[in-house]
Length: 244
Length: 244
DNA sequence: ACCTGAACACCGTTCAAGT
DNA sequence: ACCTGAACACCGTTCAAGT
Image (cartoon, rainbow over all chains, first blue to last red; front, side):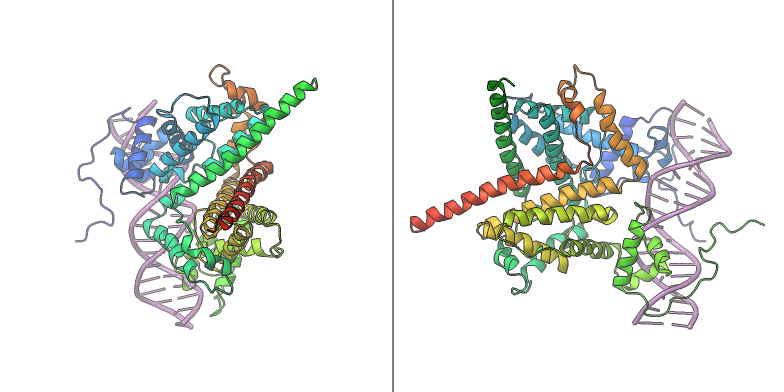
């Protein structure tokens, strides 16, 4: 007289009206899933539950999970752009603002952001972020070759660092705390003769989650970018004086 | 008269001798799996096949998959250290050497490295890499607080950027090529009135896989680090002159 | 055309059974 | 004590069946 192994989640299975799903509704449901209880994985089953629809209904609107993920990643870029002030005369300040917003958005949606660092969404809002960053590099005075290169280097640096922060935030809480604990315990108790340098500074090791880390890395990249932009502008002035 | 859905991989199932497995053998098998045909995922099934053992036999030697992954990550650090010259007077050169080696090792083992950026292995070889980097920061002239901070910022920067390169390399080939293609096609054909900056430089956009990207980012971080070290040393000299 | 239901080939993990 | 085999709860994905 035992129940079947897996019984339906809802006793009365309401049939979903036709044409009631869309890419937009699915994307919104996926974000609600990822925010529910902090660290829930984004699966078709969970999105289906959230929508009150069959998991495989999603395949009518996205070819596969990768296409859904790219759409979610582009939605992160949309959030980064939302309310962003227009480009200013301060190109370096604008770059810093974009970087900070990117990281904040990533930490708000770590379950999506953890997969976003190495991917190219190739969608509207990503295009617009790239357009902004390249614009900053051109206002800095870089020529086309340098602007393209420094866009790539700066953009990938921001994505990599922010996605890494998101990956830590997306770990299941037990694993995440074990990693953080390693810096409070393991790295504080290493033999001093084998690890003299760690021992010398261990009391001051910043947490992996200290937001100053990202701020400092950002400041360092901008240090160098400002100096290189100054030299690029000076180089071009010299070129003009000597008649090309 | 049909065959059963899943038949055994080997007709004669040789029984593995007792005590014939170990953490070391399992780690070696996992790396062989990850290198076979470029991008094979590391699963207990695949490692078991590689060892000629039952997949669940691994649980006798690692508590769960996360513990195996941390051991594999530490093995990457071991490879980074293998043959590394002793610390030199050129602390910045030593930092660059460590960064380049880390990235090369990560690209040699992308299936492991893609998960390593945000994790703390808390094992011997990671300790030794951390010891090295902190040593460089102290030789640069930073005090304990700054050495700890710049270790964290520089170390996480290298891990994040290298892990991002590994993540791209670990994508299944079809997905990876589609991402690379976006920069050769989609970003080359955007409307010029909406994306003037992208259009101005699009011919010069470096590939995601161009190794110059990492070299440039590294050079920029070291630019700033050298300047900050110089100022830290000058600040300490001034402090000594004024009697603390 | 859009959604459901069943089935498939995989995952990591647990646990009882062999030796 | 160490390895195997079966079972479980979960993945993404395909495909036939409903409406």
